Length: 221
Image (cartoon, rainbow, N blue to C red; front, side, top):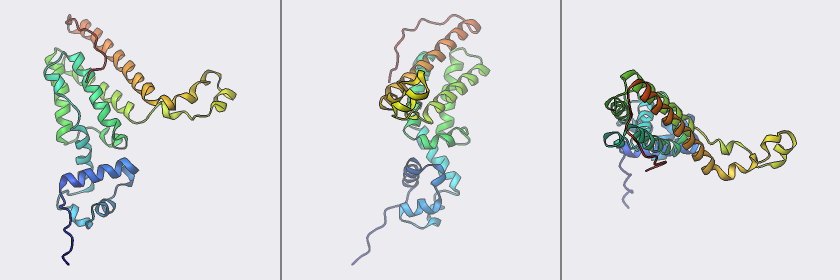
């Protein structure tokens, strides 16, 4: 009886499997030995596609970044482009929070990460922002988005009303937060993003010049 054919080992399959392992158990749990076992191959087979474990991690991180939509900067006012990009970025990172610490190290040589940085910076400079300020804005939004994706504020509170009632009189409703995770976390992100964008709009008017009127749209995908 012929032996079953082994699934073809490709870069995409390696990256997808590595991402699944990281999603399940965290960055520290990923090893080339464990990854090879999950793929049903021997460890050296991985090195036909990636020279090092770090190269695999770079590809995993870039596969997450590649899902972020940066096309807004080519067709929308810079404020609305930043808003929609920030939401897209947050959703990509929130889907894979265990990868965020690696992504937070910066783009390095990763193509999708560099393309995203180029789109954001280029869109802001075209809108009139000085290059240095465009860099600051991109960095500030990245800090904000990455921080929001690292964990859930709402899930950080246990569902034990007695804990709060006994010692923390201002937190008597905190036990309800975990059950409202999405509305709490997304509401906090929306509020913070609005505050950032309003502050940037005022800074633009003060340092660059009058800005075109923009109807508030809230979150738009």
